[in-house]
Structure formats: C-alpha cells, structure tokens
Image (tube, rainbow, N blue to C red):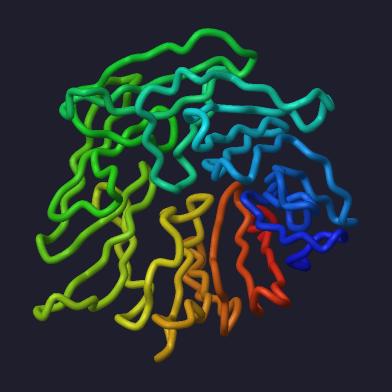
Length: 310
C-alpha cells in the first residue's frame, strides 16, 4: 500500500481490517484538519471523523469486533472520548462516551475488549490500589464501573493481568473476573514475562543482565520452549497474536539509529520461524493483521500479512 493517498497526503494506518483495507489518519490538502478515514483496496476513501490540526488531534487505541470499530480521539481542546462506527450499516461514526475516567491504555490488543454487547477499558482512580473496569454499551448508554483491588490491565475476556506495564519479574497473576479466581504465573527472578491466559513471553536474562533468549510457555509453566536467541527482540507488545504468532525483530548494527530491523514470525503451533522482511520499519499488529513499512517519508510503502489466513 503506497504511503500517500491519491491527493498526495500522507496516510498513517492505525488498524487493518484485512490485508488491503485500513483505517488511519491523513491531513486534508490544506493542512487544516486531521482526518480519520477508511482506505479500501482500490484507494477509495471514506471519512469517519476529523479534528482541527492546530489542536494537536489524536486518534488512538483502535479495536475491531466484526463490523464494529472503536477508538479514542482527543485534542488540546477536549478530553479523551470513545467513538465507534459500524462499517456495514453505513451510519456515521458517533461518540459512545466522554465519561472515560482516568483511562489507561497500554498499546496492545486488549486496550478495548468487547464482551456482552459492551466495550470495556480500564481506568485508574485517585486510589492507586484500585483499578476501575469501565464499560459502555455498543448501542450507547451510561457507563458502568466495577472496581478490582490492585493494579490490573485487561486481557482476553474475562481475564485481567496484574502487570500493566507489560513485564513482570519473578511472578505475575491472572484474574478471572467472572469466576473470582486468580492464577499465579511463576518464573525465575532472572526472567521477566508478559502473559495472556494462553501464553507467556519470557525474556531470559544472562548473568550480566543482558538478554540470553526468548521463551514461550503456558501460564502453568507447561510447553515451555526457546523461540529466539539473544539477538532477537519482541517487535510488538502483544503476546502470541491469535494465540499463535510471536512477532520478533532482529536488529542490525545501525538499528538504534535507523529503526530498521529484520522482521521474523515464530509460529507457536508448528515451531517454525519465518523470515518476513530483512529491513522493516515501524512494525505493528492489531485485529489479526501484521503490518510494517519500508522506504522513507518521500516514498513509504506499507506491507501487510493477514495472519488470520495463515
């Protein structure tokens, strides 16, 4: 996908709906507005929203469930709001709520979670020992709030994880909100891990504090295996995309300066590692699609793999 639209404006994808259709942002030709648009495979554009460019607009935290898409938008002139659109019924995008609390998003696929015809997110009240689990109906309506003691982040419904920063050391917990049951995930103090209810990514450290390798395992410690050596890194925050794919990067000598690195995917189901791109820049994944860019600002190309079809 070319990095520019037909009108010459730079397009930045935020989530792919498939291998060749994306939602993302692009300025208007006069530079006065930042648009949120759907860009289809033929290059057609449908505007979902727009905010004045002078107000530092932001469109973030996209989540997709079938035909429904949810995101946050904010600017210097207004607080964070949650918006949604149904891509099939053709109705305009609409604000679900501005009652977000002190919303916390971690840049992963569980920032918003769909369940029970509602969309959920987390917020932190004034009490740092409490996490709010907030939700609003996809059809619109008042926000419902429940509280959980501790510092939690959403995971696959109905689970929470108590390592919101993404890297617990020594032990971490998963909590099933429906059952009121906790699972303790244990590993060495020389390791750090990020977990979902299905898989954990374990960063194994050597005696000098450097990375020795990357393992995956189930939260109960079973099926543990080494998937990459010390020359690899996690390319995205999400663990085991689609409960199957670990997205990894292999930095080169100049990666710290250029941001360009090799892109590889480890398939947990087969134990196979696939080289995807020798020089990828800006690697992302959401909604089961992996995408990255090559080139520079003058000639950016976006590349995709729909992992749901693999």
